[in-house]
Image (tube, rainbow, N blue to C red; front, side):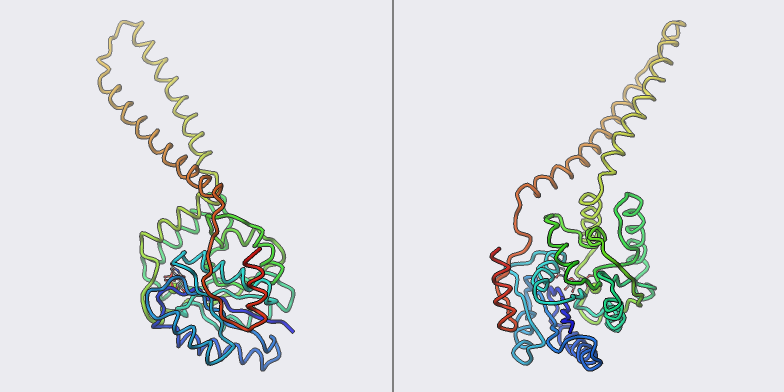
Length: 327
Ligand code: UDP
Ligand code: MG
């Protein structure tokens, strides 16, 4: 029988946790009753260094029912790392894991279809938003331009897919081979390969609390995605350099002709303009290169991507996980 894990990263989610837990509990129970998943399927919350009561709520849930498990990270490590911590724990415990947000924006009714597709042989099932009716215009616009930009730059992502997806055990094992510190899961998962499928759902409003992704975080997330997956910006710099070089040859010929035909050019405007223009270009280029060097720097350090403080769950699961963590 297939043991399913639902992995949910939580950062200051005390307002939504009870509701999320009870809705997911009902969903898991109905799937178990329908004989689709094993009875010992679990819901695994990852507390990403929350400053509110999130962890005590998770512990409480676990006390009440072994259906709920919890991982407590040593500090806030960010959404992607928290998610990875959960998935990497689940990979040795389950047959398939579904990742979703704590805020119930991802319609949990899509889980049935995801499981169905997994049972039909898909190793990765992407949850794709069919509509963004409830998002603000700003969120919709920024998110959609981001997907277009990413794909334009050659980083393969599934359009309108966030981190709501099912992965089979072997897909998770394969994911664990990707050791990057600069983590952008929705760009890495397609590289894992295997059979994939898609499930459409409507994205709902945040159930309670507010988005943990303000504009500042969204921009840095976008930058992260581009620079950790694509080297196109570097190629673009090369292209730019070549074109500027070609233009400068034309300018050189032009000024030589002017010189030999006896027209002295005052030249102040062109000099000042080119100093500014080229100075600016150099600075932009250095900035982009700096981004990559920063990435290399972080990767070579080989730091852990997440650090787990506690893991509460079934005894055997904790035993297996402790072994995995030490590896
Ligand atoms: N999250 C996290 N660590 C963080 C920020 C967010 O674990 O540093 C979790 C958060 O609790 C939620 C999920 O990541 O379950 C997605 O965050 P959010 O819903 O705020 O993002 P949005 O849906 O607005 O893009
Ligand atoms: Mg959300």
